[in-house]
Length: 141
Image 1 (cartoon, one colour):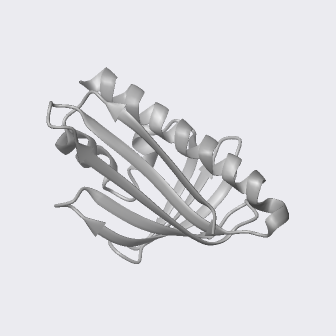
Image 2 (cartoon, rainbow, N blue to C red; image 1 turned 90 degrees about the horizontal axis):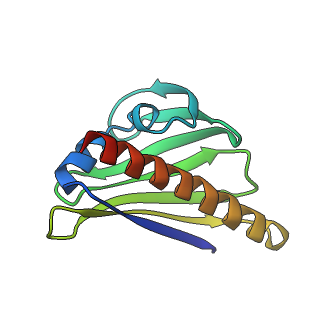
């Protein structure tokens, strides 16, 4: 199964970053690529439909959240990408110096002919999200 892992150092304390991103619906507050977001339910098992500018609609289900560890995982239930069995983890790590590292990691299955396309798409989506989060935190920091 292909795996995509991207990370970014952010000049903000992990508690500040985690507070901004831990809500499954909060992505619309810090990522301007989100054109529309619809939530169904709350907490683990909740489902969000995210319409991303230039990427399309993604339906995602929150699978786990751990405030102590600063991590949540979700499954991509439906997307415009040629993937299946997609699991994503978002983690905030304390660098011990008032800064943090945010990591976005996804595992998925795809037909061999679609793997490279899917990897590149996820790399772009994760990088865009990390860039926007980093920009947002530096504006608020």
